[in-house]
Every structure is written in structure tokens, then in C-alpha cells.
Image (cartoon, rainbow, N blue to C red; front, side):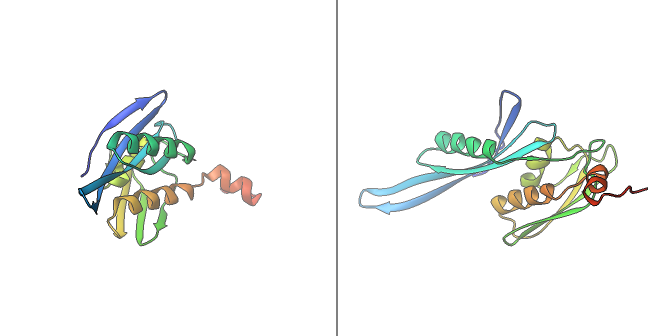
Length: 163
């Protein structure tokens, strides 16, 4: 059950990446529960991911949005793309993100695309290796974005000037 629902609250945009249904068999039949995976971002360098479960879809999505707002990450963006190549790994999913020239667009699958669009990245190339589970791919993409450093950050951290 994949949905591409997008909503806006204040400056943040929420994108529902995946809604999962789980069933448990009880005396009266099947009882369903739902899990929502949501990516939250402001389109200007802040992005977060939330995952939450509930007995109905709307509460699961609302809880996931709250979780995503708690886990926001700052992403450095230079002229619409990322500063350098990064690899994000989460469990068995590995996502490689590469900077791209202007006009390339976001070359990525649905899960990684949601993360990049929410962060405000306009041009990026990506490749997913290993698991194709959307939860693991989204978390791997976030791990990769956490590793990004600008030239100025590296100069400041090392105490040297790169020329």
C-alpha cells in the first residue's frame, strides 16, 4: 500500500512514503493495525523521517509526522545539489548520493526522491544497493545526508584553508 500524499503545515511539507497494514488473527476475525512512513522537510535544507504505528491510518500518519519533526537533520545544499558524494547505510540498505549538474533533476526511486525533494535538493543522482525496503532506504538516505560537509565546514574543522 504505497501512497504519494503530500500535505503542508506551516513551513514544513509532509510526504507519506508508505502505509503498511498488519493483521493479527483474533477470535472474531482479523484485527488490522497500520504503520506510516513520512518524510518531513522545509525545502530549504531541513529534513526528517518519522515512522509510527496505530490502529487506523490517519493517527499513524499524524504520529509519524510528529516523529519526523523530532528528528530533523540540517542538509548543506550548494547551487541546488549536494557538495560531494556520500554513502548512507542503514541495516542492509545502502544509498549512494552523487552531486549532479543543473537541470539533471532528482534521479532516484520513490523513497529516496521523497527525502531529496523534502530537503530542497534539485539535482542529484542516486543508486540503492541491497535492501529495497522503503523504511531502510529512507533511513539510509538520511544517514548519507548527515555526512555532508561544505568546503567551509571542512576548513574550519581542520583549521586549514583548502585551495
